[in-house]
Length: 102
Image 1 (cartoon, rainbow, N blue to C red):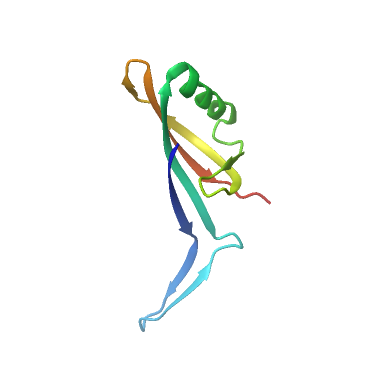
Image 2 (cartoon, one colour):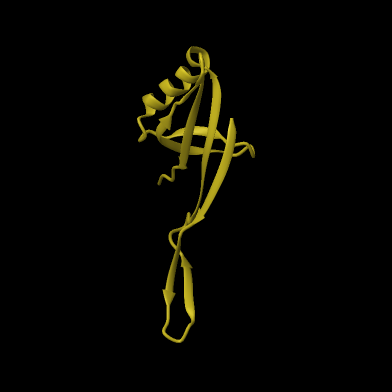
């Protein structure tokens, strides 16, 4: 899967009138790394099993996924895009959002 990481820091910024700013992190887990990627292949053998897995989790049930850096964390996926490329050759695009639980 060709994957792209998107790292975000949740930061609270208070801007003062004299040009100074105060920054603080929001929460104890203020860093998230979300991933997006695509996979191409035959509809029945490659695309449909991935789509069925995502459907089973319905965007709300987190699952474990190991990223290309070898880190396994919980993610959710709220939707997919499945364009046809040529004949029985399809592409699925996924956006994984890191899930934080208590």
